[in-house]
Amino acid sequence: MAKLKKLNLCVLISGNGSNLQALIDACTVPEFPAQIGLVISNKASAGGLVRAKKNQIPTLVVDHKAYPTRADFDRVMTKAMEDNSTELICLAGFMRLLSDAFCDNWRDRMINIHPSLLPSFKGLGVQQAAIDAGVGFSGCTVHYVRKEIDTGPIIVQAAVPLKSFDTADSLAARILVEEHKIYPHAVRLIAEGKVTISNERALTADNDRQTQSLINPPIEN
Ligand code: GRF
Image 1 (tube, rainbow, N blue to C red):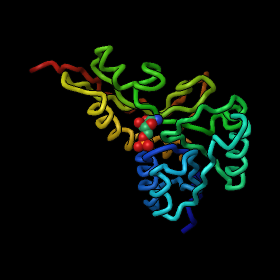
Image 2 (image 1 turned 135 degrees about the vertical axis):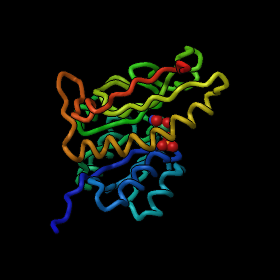
Image 3 (image 1 turned 90 degrees about the horizontal axis):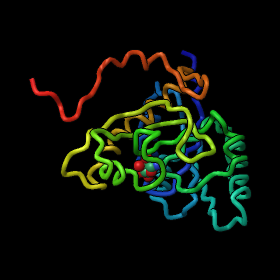
């Protein structure tokens, strides 16, 4: 049987790397159409580096403090990714802003996961912001990356209902469970060639298979 040509990923992290772990786990399934060729962290202490090493994935630390400008930092990462034949960058808790040139260079080849239903609640502290706004649902979003923070065509979203007793931590934990499902799902859709970008919308035929609406609080029968 012909060997599956896998999409080669580079995952960029700064911390714990639970989303990296979800991608690692997905990639261990032989039929999964992607592989992780490289993990880059801007912090040597990032827990995600241990996860990568445990799985024999090459790692690189590019300490942003060692470079005079953001452009220099981004150039070093690009060189490492080009040498590794990266086809898709997955930002997974990467806590650095990227230069415009970097975003242009990797346009439509770089995705991010964010713990809200974008375009609501961009930036940091978004779980508390959702609680404070009193929304019935928050959730998470995988999207292509554009220059403005937390913008870009939306590939997959998961909705998570809010509870009256939620704290930022309890909500973040429930959202993370869904993040770990939708990040590999989005990568699979891209790797299988199912995502097209048209007028800055990411379209998949699979969208049309979703038929269920969600109501919170639910209507009692
Ligand atoms: C996640 O909530 C992700 O949505 C956000 O940063 C967090 C990273 O968590 N961008 P982890 O390092 O993957 O556990």
